[in-house]
Every structure is written in C-alpha cells, then in structure tokens.
Amino acid sequence: MPISSYVLLPREPSLREAPDLEGEAGTEAPAVTSVAVTAELFAVPFAADLAPEVELPLPTAELLAHYEAKGEAGEIVEVPVAVGEAVGRVLLYGIGDGSAAALRKAGAAVARRGSGRDAIRVVLPEGPVAAFVEGALLATYTFRIGEAKATPVARIEFVGEGAEAEVARGEVIASAVAFARDLANTPSSIKTPDWLAERAVEHVLAGTGTGTANGSRVGASVRDEAALRSGRFGGLLAVGQGSVSPPRLIELSYRPEGATRHVVLVGKGITFDTGGLSLKPTEGMKFMKTDMAGGAAVIAVMGALASLDVPVRVTGLIAAAENSFSGTAQRPSDVITQYGGRTVEVLNTDAEGRLVMADALAYADAELDPDVVVDIATLTGAISVALGKGLGAIFASDDGLAAELTGAGESSGERLWRMPLIEDYVPALRSSVADLANIEAGSTYGAGSITAALFLREFTGGRPWAHLDIAGVGRSGADEGVLSKGATGYGVRLLLEWLSSRPA
Ligand code: BES
Ligand code: MN
Ligand code: ZN
Image (cartoon, rainbow, N blue to C red):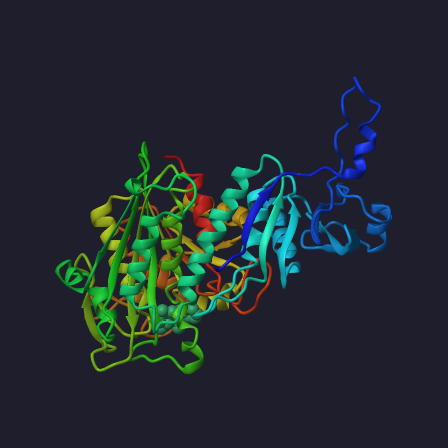
C-alpha cells in the first residue's frame, strides 16, 4: 500500500454553535461558522485573510499573532485542545494564496505532520481541492520490498461538502504518481523488460479502479524479441543484446469516443543502465534502476486517462531494454540500423537511451500518424548540471506545444524549463561510417543534453514534438514535501494536466 487510504466525511458543525439557534424560531438559522473538533489530530485551514473555522481555547487572532503565523503554504500552528476526555491538537495550516501550488504544498505539510498516527482528520480548504488531496496523499508515499511498510499516517479523513469529484481527481492523480514511483523503485533483479511489460498491460487493462475506466477504451500489446527482429527495431535490439533479459516494445492505447486528435507519448524504459561496455563507474551506476522513469510515467499516465475522462486519443510507447555489460553486448564503434532504416555509429554504449527512443519515435511517425509526439526520458546526466533537481527540461519543435507543456508544468507543480535545439550543433552528430553518430565524437560543440535532443529529433519526421529530459528530476534525495526519497514519478502530473486540457 504505497499511499494512505482516505475517506471524505461531511462537515459537522460545532456543538457550541447550537445555542445560537434557539429562540430564533421563524427566522433563518444563522450560517454555521465553525466546525467541531472531532479527532485527536484535526487540521483546519487559515490564511492572512481567512480565520480558521474552529473554536480554540484562546482567541484565534491572538493565538496566531503569538505564533507570528502568516498563513503561508506549508506553515502549521499546533494548538492543544480537549477532544472529549482526551488531549488532542488542532493543526492550523496555512494555505498561502490558495493556488493549486500552495494547496499542494499545504496538503503535503499536513499529511507529514500526521506521521506515526493512525489517522488525521483534515478540513478541506476552498479552491483547487484536488491539488490539496494530491499533495496530502503523495506525501504519505512509501516503498518497501516484501512486507509492506506502514505509511507515515495510515488514514486521512478529509472533511468537506460537495468536494467528491475534486477529492477523487486528487486521488487518481496521486495513485498514478505512486504507481510510477513503485515501478521505478523496484530493483532491476525483478524489473526485467518483460516484467515491466506485464505490469504495464495489467495496469492499463485494469484501469486505476475509480471513475469510468472500462476495458473497451484501452488496449495493450507487447513486441517481444522475435517481433522486434521482424519489425527491424535495431536500436532496441542492439541495446538489449547484452542482457539475458531481452527487450520489449510496449504499446498502450486509449481511444475515447469522439476523439479526433492523436497524441503519442514515448517513454525511455531502460530497466538498468550499466553503461554497457562504455561502463559506468560505481557512483554513476548505483541509481540506474530508475532509468525507466520516463517509461514508468507513460505507463502510469495511460492507466489514469479513463478515470479522468481525458478527451483525446493517446498511444503510449515504452521502449524497454536492459543495458548490460557482457560478451554479447554491443561494442563502441558498432553500426546499427534503427527502425526505418537509418544507420547509427554507436560511439558510446552509455548513450543507449536515444537508441531505444529513436526506434519508438520513428515507429510512431511511420505507423501511428500522431498529431503530437511527446517523449520523456532520463536521457542525460548533463541536464541536471544545467537545471539541477528542481526543474525538468523541455526541448520542442513547436512553440505552441512548448507553451502548453510549460503551462501544465506550472499548474501541476512539475516545472519545466525550455532548452534550445541549436541548429549550429547538428554537425556534432555526423559520422564518417553511418548516417549519424550517437554522441559527438570530440568536444567542438559540447552541450550533451542538446545534442541528445537533436539526435531524437532526427526520428520525429518533422511532426510537432517535445522531448522532456528528466534525468535531474526523476529521483529525489530526501523525503520532502510531495516527494519521497527515490523515484519521484515526475511527469505523471504534468502530462495528465496537459492531456486533460487538450481538445478532443
Ligand atoms: N541514463 C543515463 C543518464 C542519467 C544520468 C540519468 C544520471 C539519470 C542520472 C544515460 O543513459 C547516460 O548514460 N547518458 C550519458 C550520455 C553520454 C554517454 C553522452 C551521460 O549522461 O553521461
Ligand atoms: Mn546510459
Ligand atoms: Zn540511460
């Protein structure tokens, strides 16, 4: 159970309000202005211009002034109260400007304060409640192999009226992110390409359990090694040839009624990246079980589309292979033939992501006739040098698409920064023996993330395309806010936000 369970409870008005209603027969009952404290850990929103809706042992204004509370998102003031015979605490939580970003942060702070408890009861704020619920549930994510690890707080009881749809949406999104994290956190001894394909198929065919998911709108197929060979997917085969666990191309489809546009999502699914014969040092290799984080995001997104009633047709492709070091591995200087016939000189076997992605991108262009292609990949270590661990990179062939995705990143809390596709750097990928080289041979041009993106662009057939490099943001080093140590599930929230707002 990776995130807390939750329930939505109706608001209970404060019992202390009741006498006000007496003797007023014939007149309208006054609006209930406070809620009753009904749990030992009871959280209530407040902001600079919003008094908490709960009666406290001291005047709230003086209490807040005493704590110098400003009502910022993530801020929490604890006040001891009596709950029946027991001692409890009211947590006054700041909601800042009430934006989705602020509520997400507030939700995470409240849930984290519930750590070690069986339950915490939380009065929902006004506004984008889905973001609040998403933040609260994601902050409770944990991962452990074998016996389930207890979530920091077992159960969150949300209190609110008319918030069912928003709460459900927050839960669907948080569950999708948690699923992507689970896949990426799973050790590669378990997570072979075939295992990943099985999980993907199982996941999308099951829907995510809520909403209107139904089997007829979703489909899944997997190309095994033989199918990849007959389809001439030379990039996937070359990268996978060093491993005892053969590669797979996973194809997931979602076709809502009435859709006219088609989006293709492509995810990098390297189940472990040793670097191949261009072997990584220990430090660089130890986190490489998460080198399928882009593919995990695509699988999780595909599984949530039906529940969120996304109007547009979406196909998800996950290029899955293990980049192993062995006697059957490809060699630096090998020349491979990508799907579609282009030849590539493999100068560095550690630049494997672009080889598997190129096959999937070329296949999408040749066979799926997409209106838009978005790929997501832990592609280059260089991108975390440029942008750090807080921002994902977007490269795009189309300004409108870049703006849409960047906007979705802002509102979903997964920020993107646009990077340039510099035409002057295209010659970096020239090869004397093949159509392209997979890395720049020398260091005339530099900018490893840009040349990697330029390599991918070669296979997009000139269609509107965006590439998200998530090598920096795919892993978190600490439990903080909505993130937990390990895989972040980055891209799930932003892609779901973007797809939800796309025209059919
Ligand atoms: N999977 C790595 C990129 C990566 C690095 C992801 C750190 C997450 C954290 C990718 O396959 C890779 O090895 N890229 C090389 C490219 C180089 C050989 C041109 C890199 O970044 O060093
Ligand atoms: Mn690599
Ligand atoms: Zn890699």
